Image (cartoon, rainbow, N blue to C red; front, side, top):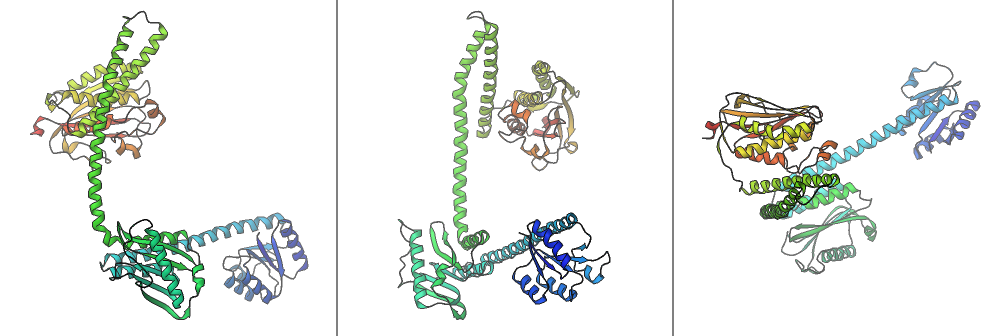
Amino acid sequence: MIKTLLVSDNKSQTEKFQSIFNKNSYDFSIMTDEALIYDYISAETPDIIIIDEEYKNIKTLNKKIKSICENTIIIFLISDNKVDKDLIKYANAFFTNDMSEDLILSTLNINLRMKSSLDMLSNSNKDLADSLYRLNALYSTSSQFAGTLDKSKLIQYMIEGMDKALSFSLTCTLSLCTEDKPVLLINSLYELSEELITALKLRVILNYNSLFEGKTLPADITLDNLKVIKQIKYPASRFTFTLFQYDNMFAPISLGDNFFGCIEIFKETAFTAEDSTCFQTIAQQVSLPLKSATLYQELIETNHKLEKLERLKSEFISIVSHELRTPLTSIKNSLDILMSGRCGEITQAADKFLSMAMRNVQRLSGIINDLLDLSKIEAGKMDFNFAPTNINTVIGYVKSALSEVAKTKGLNLITSEAENLPDITADAQRLEQVLTNLVSNAIKFTPENKTIKISSSLVNSKDIKINEYFKDSIKLKEGDYIEVCVEDEGIGIAEKDLLHAFDKFAQIENSLSRKAGGTGLGLPIAKQLLEAHRGAIWCDSELHRGSKFYFVIPVSTNLN
């Protein structure tokens, strides 16, 4: 409920505002005694204070209110439109005697919304300041960890870092790495009795044993062999057993299979989620200087495992693809026989379903071929038959093969080939595969009544304009190259997806691409085939404005 205070001894005004605020469920109070006002606002800050300009000692009252109530809305009640200049600097708003109830409530609501925004900003600034302070403490502690390999100093830096970041009441740190026998480091605000120290030792031993329940303990720890080293900040005061009612956090300090100790921290006020994160972070950071060698070894072993998994994956794809190809060939042959009519007359309905089956067999065959090609490329087993090849011959073959497909979809497939292009040393069949894939994609993703264009040209490496997104990954040697471009007027590719166009199993995320389907292997296969020719592939595209896929291959003299 909104707390409102009216400072006025004008009866008619107090009755008016009391009626308004009671009717609108405000927590409303009226006061005139200055001492009582100070006590009231000090105990619980009101949201709104309305002050009659006729109130005695109004300037003194304003200064006092501002010093106590930083974010309270102050509104002055004035008799006319003339305002004392000294009051303006204290006011958030003004009410006049003849102001309507609706205008009063509207003014209040506007100021309450402003106050809410200011409160949120103030809280955000406080949270930001706390976060910055904690980050600075973490950074400072991390810097200290990096500056030494002395185990005793590392443990001490950890405790100091937690004190800076969390302002604890007491910490109990069990260390198995700073001396020959177990040590309990107690850092406390106040002095501890022998009975309380014994209780803390028992608690540490129980926590330690619980970490290795059912396992071999790194060391046997008892009350007799656990050495206590304590540091007391304010010895004049003393903790009691109520310490165990404080909020606490616990964390082990370990290095893989090696255990260096554990830490428990107590605080009279409750820990926050940010405190817990900070605590765990520092507890982990203290072991980083010791973990580096172990992590490096783990990294080497992980890389070996990943390489093995990659080999197994490629072998699995190859085996599965070969196993699928055999029954698929039988299915295709059977469909060919059925569709030829050699097994009897085919009805119109049967022909429809047989054609559907044949299309899906061909699609599945293409997927299997893509998987086989990918596994061969990754295994370095792809065979190439390099020979002098003219790119225009390849373009002519692909145009002849796909013109009817394009026409069926209502597309116009055209070519613009430069004359007298020099030969390139290439595997013509693989280049046909690359170009067929690019043109097929263009057909797949281009709406009807549009044009797809294949062009070729001779360019020098210094004149090749590679899209900026691909410049870092494409490095071409100096010399002349044959450049081929497949340009369409299709759906295009968003700028954020350009670099992912050649990723394995990647597809453009829109409804048309999902409808068209596919494995997402065509472009990565094309990329690797072209790299085998010492060439490169990239694209220029804009969403809904079509795409241009370019690839270049060095002329024969560049390969020597």
